[in-house]
Length: 237
Image (tube, rainbow, N blue to C red):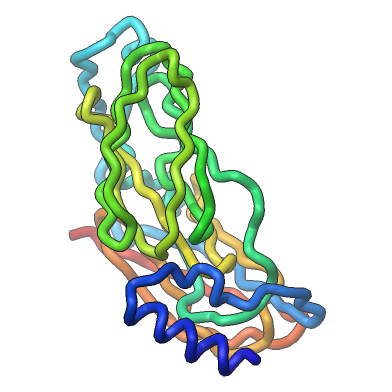
């Protein structure tokens, strides 16, 4: 059955169809885990303060900083996406609705994780006009005005890819959508830590992506019912 699914999925890719369904999700009784940390090599640059030039009564209520590279006191890098590549079976895809909030004229979260085929909620809690502009290639780009009376927009993303989102009304508002076709992904916390759970035993390729520093990959073996460690280190460019 799985071999037939893979053949059909390959045909679907060739035809440009959505293949989010091709992942085989179910119970993982002997799964292991992957835990680790992503760190910056050397002295990291301080995050720059952003000048607020519009809707200052709302956008300027709290200080804003450039979030493209956030490094904690321990050298851990925040907002790095770590994921297993090309895994075809394992635990079920998440069913919660991912939500992007526009609050204080910033995107929360800065990096939004989205299961392929999911519909996300884009919220405007600011009471000012925002404009959602996505820059997907596998997923059609969107450009939508979101005035204060349109508090929630629903948007569906079918294809796995990483792409930028910006607000055309407030040029400093910038973030990322990360669409994945399997559930084995995580974004690092303020200390650079991440964790993947219920991973079927096997050999995998693990990738870490950071928006300004690029990607790192490593091979990893996950034994049954065992947690392994995988750390990454990025150097500045």
